[in-house]
Amino acid sequence: MRKLILFGCSIAALAVLGGSAGAVAPDVGVLSVEDGKGMVMLDLKGSVLGRLSNGTLRVTDLTPRDRYSALVVGRKLAQERLGPKTVLYRGQGLRFRMVGGAFRIIVRGTGISVSAVGRGVVVLDSEPRYPGEDVGVYSLEEGVDCDVERDLCTPLPDEPERFTLGAPMDEADGRKGR
View 1 (tube, rainbow, N blue to C red):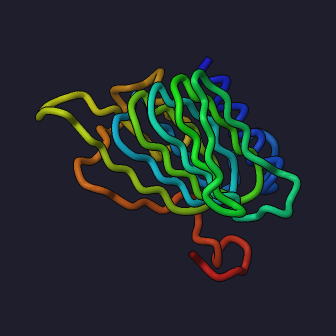
View 2: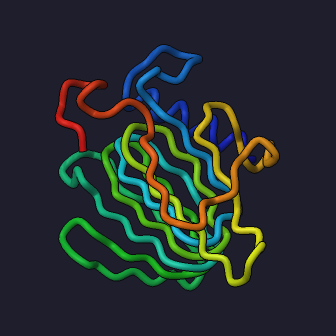
Protein backbone atom coordinates (compact mmCIF):
# COMPACT_ATOMS: atom_id res chain seq x y z
CA MET A 1 0.00 0.00 0.00
CA ARG A 2 2.79 2.40 0.95
CA LYS A 3 4.60 1.72 -2.35
CA LEU A 4 1.40 2.51 -4.20
CA ILE A 5 1.05 5.81 -2.33
CA LEU A 6 4.68 6.78 -3.06
CA PHE A 7 4.26 5.79 -6.71
CA GLY A 8 1.01 7.76 -7.00
CA CYS A 9 2.61 10.80 -5.36
CA SER A 10 5.55 10.60 -7.79
CA ILE A 11 3.28 10.35 -10.82
CA ALA A 12 1.12 13.25 -9.62
CA ALA A 13 4.16 15.46 -9.08
CA LEU A 14 5.49 14.62 -12.52
CA ALA A 15 2.18 15.57 -14.06
CA VAL A 16 2.12 18.86 -12.13
CA LEU A 17 5.78 19.82 -12.39
CA GLY A 18 6.50 18.30 -15.80
CA GLY A 19 9.04 15.65 -16.59
CA SER A 20 9.51 12.47 -18.56
CA ALA A 21 7.44 9.37 -17.85
CA GLY A 22 9.13 6.72 -15.75
CA ALA A 23 11.63 8.99 -13.99
CA VAL A 24 11.41 11.74 -11.39
CA ALA A 25 12.55 15.07 -12.82
CA PRO A 26 16.12 15.89 -11.69
CA ASP A 27 15.06 19.14 -9.98
CA VAL A 28 12.39 17.38 -7.85
CA GLY A 29 13.09 15.84 -4.44
CA VAL A 30 11.45 12.94 -2.63
CA LEU A 31 10.70 12.56 1.11
CA SER A 32 9.48 9.50 3.01
CA VAL A 33 8.65 9.61 6.76
CA GLU A 34 7.32 6.61 8.66
CA ASP A 35 6.02 6.23 12.24
CA GLY A 36 7.15 9.76 13.14
CA LYS A 37 6.64 11.25 16.57
CA GLY A 38 7.15 15.00 16.72
CA MET A 39 6.95 17.54 13.90
CA VAL A 40 7.27 17.46 10.11
CA MET A 41 7.08 20.81 8.30
CA LEU A 42 6.93 21.02 4.51
CA ASP A 43 7.02 24.24 2.52
CA LEU A 44 6.88 23.01 -1.03
CA LYS A 45 5.46 23.04 -4.51
CA GLY A 46 4.49 19.51 -5.41
CA SER A 47 2.47 16.68 -3.93
CA VAL A 48 2.07 15.31 -0.41
CA LEU A 49 0.22 12.23 0.84
CA GLY A 50 0.15 11.36 4.50
CA ARG A 51 -1.49 10.14 7.63
CA LEU A 52 -1.39 11.07 11.29
CA SER A 53 -2.54 8.79 14.13
CA ASN A 54 -3.16 11.59 16.62
CA GLY A 55 -2.34 15.29 16.52
CA THR A 56 -2.71 18.43 14.47
CA LEU A 57 -2.23 19.34 10.83
CA ARG A 58 -1.84 22.99 9.84
CA VAL A 59 -2.22 23.67 6.11
CA THR A 60 -1.55 26.99 4.39
CA ASP A 61 -2.41 27.10 0.70
CA LEU A 62 0.30 29.32 -0.80
CA THR A 63 -1.49 29.39 -4.17
CA PRO A 64 -5.16 29.75 -3.14
CA ARG A 65 -6.39 30.85 -6.56
CA ASP A 66 -5.17 27.74 -8.39
CA ARG A 67 -7.31 24.64 -8.94
CA TYR A 68 -5.63 22.58 -6.21
CA SER A 69 -6.91 22.29 -2.65
CA ALA A 70 -6.10 20.21 0.42
CA LEU A 71 -8.12 17.10 1.22
CA VAL A 72 -8.18 16.00 4.89
CA VAL A 73 -10.33 13.26 6.43
CA GLY A 74 -10.29 11.47 9.78
CA ARG A 75 -12.04 10.45 12.98
CA LYS A 76 -13.08 13.12 15.43
CA LEU A 77 -11.96 15.68 12.84
CA ALA A 78 -12.24 19.30 13.90
CA GLN A 79 -11.09 22.16 11.73
CA GLU A 80 -10.47 25.78 12.56
CA ARG A 81 -9.82 28.51 9.99
CA LEU A 82 -6.82 30.54 11.17
CA GLY A 83 -6.78 32.95 8.24
CA PRO A 84 -7.87 33.27 4.61
CA LYS A 85 -5.33 30.65 3.46
CA THR A 86 -4.70 28.60 6.64
CA VAL A 87 -6.71 25.80 8.28
CA LEU A 88 -5.83 23.84 11.45
CA TYR A 89 -7.11 20.26 11.59
CA ARG A 90 -7.24 18.22 14.83
CA GLY A 91 -8.22 14.63 15.25
CA GLN A 92 -7.37 10.98 15.13
CA GLY A 93 -6.64 8.83 12.12
CA LEU A 94 -6.14 11.86 9.87
CA ARG A 95 -5.37 11.21 6.22
CA PHE A 96 -4.39 14.06 3.95
CA ARG A 97 -3.59 14.78 0.32
CA MET A 98 -2.23 17.93 -1.27
CA VAL A 99 -1.59 17.33 -4.97
CA GLY A 100 -0.23 20.18 -7.07
CA GLY A 101 0.02 23.79 -6.04
CA ALA A 102 2.20 25.11 -3.25
CA PHE A 103 1.53 24.42 0.43
CA ARG A 104 3.05 24.99 3.86
CA ILE A 105 2.15 21.96 5.97
CA ILE A 106 2.98 21.43 9.64
CA VAL A 107 2.21 17.97 11.04
CA ARG A 108 2.52 17.53 14.84
CA GLY A 109 1.76 14.40 16.79
CA THR A 110 2.27 10.64 16.70
CA GLY A 111 2.10 8.12 13.91
CA ILE A 112 3.23 10.57 11.23
CA SER A 113 3.67 9.00 7.78
CA VAL A 114 4.37 11.30 4.83
CA SER A 115 5.33 10.80 1.19
CA ALA A 116 6.21 14.00 -0.66
CA VAL A 117 7.53 14.84 -4.12
CA GLY A 118 8.41 18.37 -5.15
CA ARG A 119 10.66 21.35 -4.51
CA GLY A 120 10.96 23.29 -1.30
CA VAL A 121 12.04 23.05 2.33
CA VAL A 122 11.49 20.33 4.93
CA VAL A 123 12.05 20.64 8.70
CA LEU A 124 12.08 17.48 10.82
CA ASP A 125 12.07 17.31 14.63
CA SER A 126 11.36 14.33 16.90
CA GLU A 127 9.78 14.62 20.32
CA PRO A 128 10.60 11.49 22.35
CA ARG A 129 8.97 11.05 25.75
CA TYR A 130 12.03 9.21 27.08
CA PRO A 131 15.63 8.68 25.85
CA GLY A 132 16.00 5.92 23.29
CA GLU A 133 12.32 5.89 22.32
CA ASP A 134 11.61 5.03 18.67
CA VAL A 135 10.64 8.37 17.09
CA GLY A 136 10.32 7.19 13.48
CA VAL A 137 12.52 7.34 10.40
CA TYR A 138 12.91 9.39 7.23
CA SER A 139 14.64 9.29 3.86
CA LEU A 140 15.34 11.94 1.25
CA GLU A 141 16.55 9.37 -1.29
CA GLU A 142 14.52 8.67 -4.42
CA GLY A 143 12.99 5.22 -4.33
CA VAL A 144 13.48 4.55 -0.61
CA ASP A 145 10.16 3.85 1.11
CA CYS A 146 10.72 3.88 4.87
CA ASP A 147 7.68 1.66 5.44
CA VAL A 148 9.25 -1.11 3.33
CA GLU A 149 13.00 -0.48 3.72
CA ARG A 150 13.20 0.90 7.26
CA ASP A 151 16.88 -0.14 7.64
CA LEU A 152 17.83 2.24 4.79
CA CYS A 153 16.24 5.18 6.59
CA THR A 154 17.54 7.58 9.26
CA PRO A 155 15.91 8.22 12.68
CA LEU A 156 14.20 11.59 12.95
CA PRO A 157 16.59 14.21 14.41
CA ASP A 158 16.42 15.18 18.11
CA GLU A 159 16.70 18.89 17.27
CA PRO A 160 14.94 20.67 14.37
CA GLU A 161 16.85 20.02 11.17
CA ARG A 162 16.20 21.77 7.84
CA PHE A 163 16.59 20.10 4.42
CA THR A 164 16.13 21.28 0.85
CA LEU A 165 13.88 19.08 -1.22
CA GLY A 166 14.79 19.15 -4.90
CA ALA A 167 16.59 21.98 -6.66
CA PRO A 168 16.12 25.49 -5.23
CA MET A 169 13.28 27.36 -6.92
CA ASP A 170 15.57 29.85 -8.70
CA GLU A 171 17.66 27.07 -10.32
CA ALA A 172 14.66 24.96 -11.26
CA ASP A 173 12.42 27.52 -12.92
CA GLY A 174 14.09 30.90 -12.88
CA ARG A 175 12.18 32.29 -9.88
CA LYS A 176 13.63 33.56 -6.64
CA GLY A 177 14.39 30.90 -4.04
CA ARG A 178 12.46 30.81 -0.77
